[in-house]
Length: 213
Image (cartoon, rainbow, N blue to C red; front, side):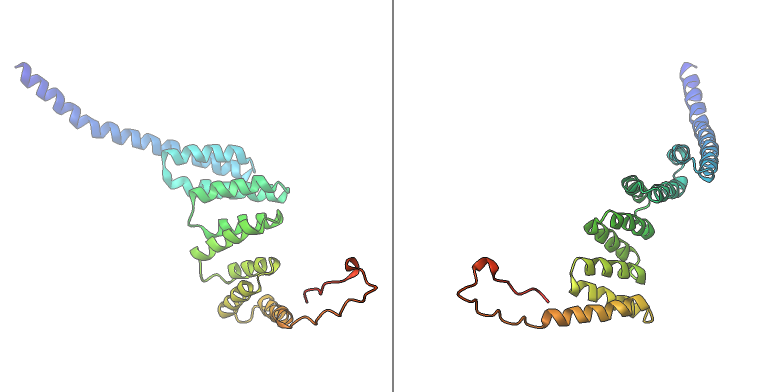
């Protein structure tokens, strides 16, 4: 009799377990939905910290809200960049990338801020990542071509400019850059004239080295 009772009790627990689990899931889903609504409302009011806190909690309960959290990080980053708080903006874009690493737009946005800080190497890396994710987006090649030009890398700048023109043949900025790069390449290819022989009256300190064209 005792064994029978234990068996019935265990069987009853087994039947109840899925119901308890389902009830908890329903409760979590409702709480996540409420938190997500709170986050959305806070975002509308530009209460960024409150919005991020609510959406972080919502995402912990239901991962489907992760894109909303990434979007609010981007909004706060944009607001920070507008106020010239560039490092804060970069940090928030970094958080958004952790959540949505396949979103090329976030890399583009962070690169734009990095260029404000004149951190061309990091901007170059971010545009390169954006290109990997969206290789058919002409403007990413255009931005990267600009950075290469600023760094004096005519070869890579020309290569990216050619890609822009392949994707968008009428792109006026790329057409202008192409002409400019061809001129620079031509000047670099022109050998510098030989230095005149130094006069015996001219001191070494007064001699001039030829300048790069």
